[in-house]
Image (cartoon, rainbow, N blue to C red; front, side, top):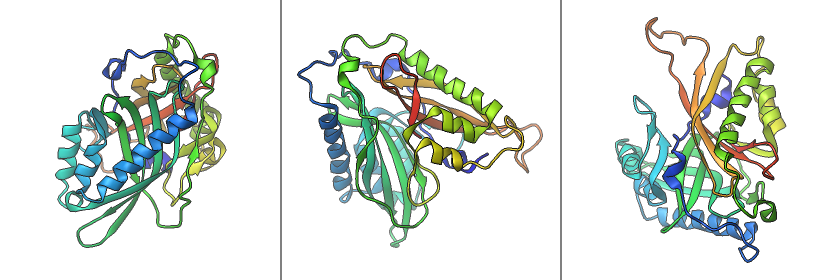
Length: 307
């Protein structure tokens, strides 16, 4: 499996109804997307500030929606509630007593301001003073309690200097999304994920990532910083001697903002080759993933923006 996909740990999917909100369409009086994104980023930073006084599991739990999703190792690949996620984090005897610190450096918002995402850098400080460096990607929803995380993942990162400045990704043109949201938004987004995977079987994983990503897309990647831009993300994959022989993937579920321009697809990545040491009768293990998707107008194609 190419190195970026090996490092992707993903959140599980929610049914579209899980966060269905009866919300008005975007109006001329609504705050600008930039202002709404700034509000989301401040919420992320506020949770990070409050984390300094909490143990890591409780710091993460404080920002989660009640039905938030996070990946987990073992027989249950997706945890589907805040309670389950916090219990899972507490079960790690080392990290459970650690402290968390993080800050966002990239983010985006839906045209209606109801969904958004942030990505950034995370440090877990263990009781013995050891620091574990990571990156995170959080997909947020506006709830009665304020901004809360609907899906969340962290991956390790290499040591090294990173840029702490924040930059918006894919700010929407709210005027293009006024009125009723496209009824088929979820279906077309999931179809884009399937087409993305199908293209990888023909052209190769790297080229498919180049074709289906936005110019400002980000990948958490294994290095110190984020990998930015579809071309750079594509270049990070090892060339395949024969496309279609390494991995396959597909979406199981998805979640789309009410405005229909931002969403997340959830699924599993399966190696095509049986891992060494795996029993002949054992199923080949799959890795969960999530991909954040964006489109500029109702007629524009979906392209991944963060993963």
